[in-house]
Length: 360
Image 1: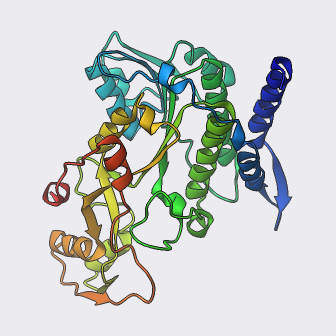
Image 2: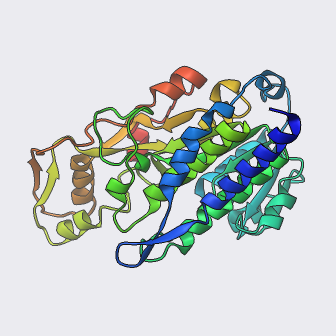
Image 3: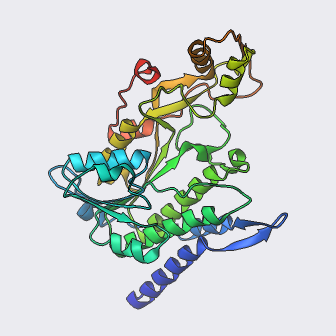
C-alpha cells in the first residue's frame, strides 16, 4: 500500500471507530441500543494492522525515569490513590475530572487539575498534550436501559481519549474495567480466557455491558492504530471498611434486624482486592512492554469472602438472634475467586492483604 493510500485508510478507520460510539438504532419496544455487533465485527476484520516493531523503542519502563501522567477520573476512589502514588514517586500528574474532590488537599507542584469532562473533545485534546501515559479511570454513572445517554457518554468520552492519545503518540493507555464483564461463570476459577457475556448479568443495569463495550473500543485502537493499550478487570475494591461491609447485603441486614432466618448458598461468595493492591498492579504495568495489549484480572484470592461469613458478621454486629441456614446450590456458584495467576506470572504482582486484615 502506498503511503498516501495508507494515510487515507488510517484516517477512514479512525472516523469509523469514532462513529461506532454514536450509532444507534431502534429495537424492541422503542429502546435505543448501541450497535455493539458493528464494533466487534470491525475489531475482527482489521486486526491484521497490528505491528509491534516500535515497542522496544517506545517502552523504556519507569525505572530511573519520570513520566508525565494523565489520570482521567483522578478524583475518584481508585484514581485518587493512584494520583497520590504517582506524586509520591516524583512523577508529573495531570488530572481530568468534573470535580476536584480530595485532590484539592494534595498540594504539589507536580499536580495539575483540569476541571472538565472526557466528553468535551477540545478539553481532552488540550489536556493530552505532552502526556506519556493515560490512566482512564473515569465513569459517568447511572446506567439504565431506559436511558442510554450516559451509556453513550462513556463511549463518546473514551473515544475522545483514545483519539487524542493516538494523535499525541502516548506510550501507554491503561483502562480499568471490571470482572462483571464475564457474566455467568462457565468454569471456575475465571481467568482472562473465560467467555465474556456481560448481557447475562446486566439486566436493567448496563454497567457490565458498558465496561465490556469500552474494553472493545480500547482494543480496537490497539489492533488498528497500534495504540499501546492495557486493560485491568477489577473485582470488588475495598479500603478502610471491612470487606464484609459490602453495599449489596441490605437484605441480610434487614433479616438480621427482624431476627429472621438468613439462607445462603454453600461456598458462594465474592472476590475482592484492596485499593492499594490495585494501584500496585497499575504501577507495575506502567510502561512495561509485557503489559501492552494484555487484559489482567486484579483480585486477591486471600480476601475472598463467603456469604456465610458475611451473614455471621452481620448477625454478630447487630446482636441478632437470626439463624443462618446453608443451602446446597443447584448450579455453579462463585465458590472460588477469579484467577489472578496471569498478572502474577507476567508482571510479578503479589497481593499482600490477609483475610484477617480485610475483615477487621
